Length: 242
Image (tube, rainbow, N blue to C red):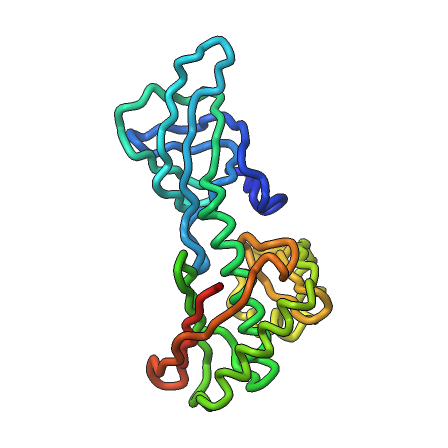
């Protein structure tokens, strides 16, 4: 089982770990900061190298993808031509600029979903974060397009409040007392006893396993650039940050 360091500190940029498995260019560690592609948040990228203070020639190998595989996170290197083996101690470094942008977009998507939920009662049916823009899908029959700019304004007003963003593990039954989490009761496997809750001030609380900023002031401003019909009872908001 890979320990997920990013759940404890989204701002940590470097870490040390031990290789538990090597399969050509696929490396498994006992712990990792690399977020695996999941939940609409793309993979972290970065580098790993042997953690050997006696060797100044340690080569950095690019990590181009991270994925979940059972209870492990498997890293894909750019090349199979490496000298890493099981039992090696390594140093890992994530690409912070990319990670932080995803953090900003992820928290922003929670703010947008909060506003839409408060205005319409609609829940998220899907999302995908990007580096230039992101999208959130809702179970809505129709969008009141005149309301889109109002949603944008309300979301930006929330960002200006400099609200603290916090994450905590909550017992399953306690978490299900939160309306937005209760809606997931039939989706979350019964085996999950502790649910990770991301809170934005006293406004919003959502179950989430992604990485987030510490304060809404880090996000900047939200600009909704498109509202789309994606089929029956499915409407999409596309937004960017500025």
